[in-house]
Image 1 (cartoon, rainbow, N blue to C red):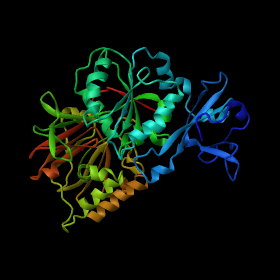
Image 2 (image 1 turned 180 degrees about the vertical axis):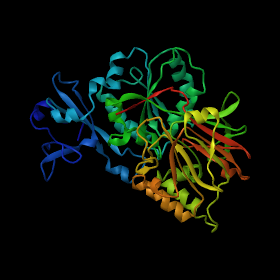
Image 3 (image 1 turned 45 degrees about the horizontal axis):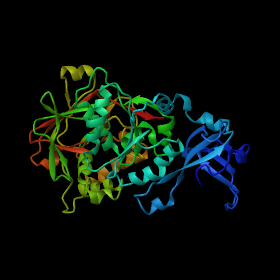
Image 4 (image 1 turned 45 degrees about the vertical axis):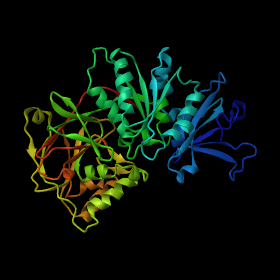
Length: 473
């Protein structure tokens, strides 16, 4: 199927939309196309939008994505590619079932854009299995071309060259312009890490009274993509294109993780260390997805290598196997420390922390997100961008018991019904480490690893400041 493959006059009365099941758009197949049914079909989840056709005053175009079979054998290729279909009268029910175009972020952006280029496309070449470049070439750029948008005039493309590219872009361009009150939009072809870099850079800097929050659209190209799954971006098959064209701006909730002196980021496959930003003299990181200690933090850190990343989301299961069933035959680690929670803002503000009575721990996790990866429902009560921090935790168990517990998360979040698991809404979490080996003092903050000094602590508090909006349907 090619872009604008059929002229409007050929499709005036022939496009149909069937609502049963997931919904399907159909039309007679083109001359020379072999099909048993004689019809081409687009599943509703593949539809991006219905927009006025730029080439026909009274026509419309159905924008959609088509599966890319080659991506099954080459994980660096885009899983879907952009397509469009021209017609003068799109089915009314199809238009009704999509969010309205005229109130979307994109519609407002196009109407108010200025001569200054403030739409930034960030292509994270190292995220996930390396799909971002091909997704740009075969999905996003064709959409922008269809919309008659030109590079450098209407948008700027930034290909990442290192793990500091997004931070540098935020520091050098996004932050100064936001402080001048300039509206900006960013399309991140990246994983959760790209959003984390933007958040931390903005929250770690001075913001003026004129500060204008950037709008960020995530095209999920990382490994877990928890934020995209949990905010609704992946509710369809368009990899964020529907959110880009039909989505609206929503505030992104943030938590603050404060650490004891000496805490450092582990980078370059844990071969190097970097300091954290300091807020009032305290090492501080900000997150929008998850903060964890124990099994989750260990497997995220252990699998954060070039070799593991080639396997995509399977990297977590591979790392978990070694963590839960060590090759030397030893049992999985018992994490030692004091875990305390504050369940209300009053408790948090007055320092009334409640100790979780447990000799050792296996899994301690606080999150805003419903999903940590597609199908892995870590917090079933969480709703998209609801700003409520929730905690999932259990004590030290055998490797097989941990597999059993976490396997239930793949069954709609049934793990929270397990008597061994604690699950509750909280406002704050504090961990005081009692581990000699630094390996067991690693904390995960939105996919990044922080190692805490011996005898140190971490404190997570809901609310870190509103510095950007995400665009989602």
